[in-house]
Length: 425
Ligand code: AMP
Ligand code: GLY
Image 1 (cartoon, rainbow, N blue to C red):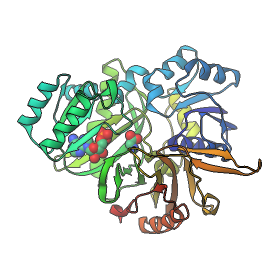
Image 2 (image 1 turned 45 degrees about the horizontal axis):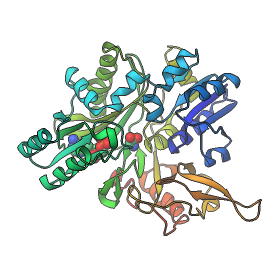
Image 3 (image 1 turned 90 degrees about the vertical axis):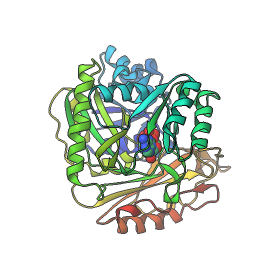
């Protein structure tokens, strides 16, 4: 089989690496992929993730059996719809189904209609009305840009001043452009967060092992929200019974609701959840694999990944089995200053020292040729540079081993959190 992965981040690196493990997969292409993927035997093609006509042409010319779309932007631009219209198999929701991620207002209205537990909220397009609502509700309170903002469009405000500032930035200063012309203001929820992803095909839901992301930039969950600074799976603080409740009251209801709305979902449905005293509630839905959760969840998949996706694409029952024992941990190396201003182009030294049993998933890296033509080096090229991942019997074992490896990448231009996974020990 030949498979095409659309995207070029750490998540896509993990998807491509897992596909390469499947015995029937001969070639994995990635568009645009990244330099690290090429090192692992993935064939990278220089086509942007949203260039549907060229992606389709490539898939046709190279007799690609199926395509997996990683990131949200191509999904929301309708790449899967375009592939389907061209008679090609692509795994991911259509544009209509991806709206569950693309508009927080849509997601909130949808959850209200299908009685899916989530924070109470209200949507605004007028600043004065939004401000009046803020003042009425008081802090702590949460303000979210309606549209996509790379995981950064959420302000959790502990005071009314912070909330007002966030609201002004979003609605009056267009901090996230069009994405924040509309905002959702919601109730502040308290509890342990976790990510529950599932393979979904219409009304059928096949859950994955749960994971926990670390969204804040700094240790102790301080600092601004990022795309994610590290993750681990499973999450022992979350009881199995609560996960079962979440599957029934959230994922299954959402899958059925999307079918009823004529937005049938086929792809990965990601529920960002919080375990409140009143049970699990939805913080957000995503229409794709989480990043960095995928880098720790896919290594736990025991069944053949290519078979699984192929079965879903053909409306057959997939074999979905996850490892029950041990843990997987992933730590992100980021550019100093991320998620705000940061510089790139710094050499990533120490990569050649990383132990061979550690997986390196690249995200924002680039291969540069040194002064000697043969000399090639990886340099930073984004906010999140790469992630190191390992499996171990216990979280402590995984953490100690992985931080020894992270030290090899120490560099004043980069940073990483030193507490990833600690909550699970
Ligand atoms: P999101 O991008 O929607 O996942 O939000 C980013 C982060 O903001 C979440 O991981 C939570 O830590 C926090 N957050 C979002 N919504 C709420 C809420 N209603 N109550 C408390 N924290 C929230
Ligand atoms: N890790 C959160 C996300 O992928 O949106």
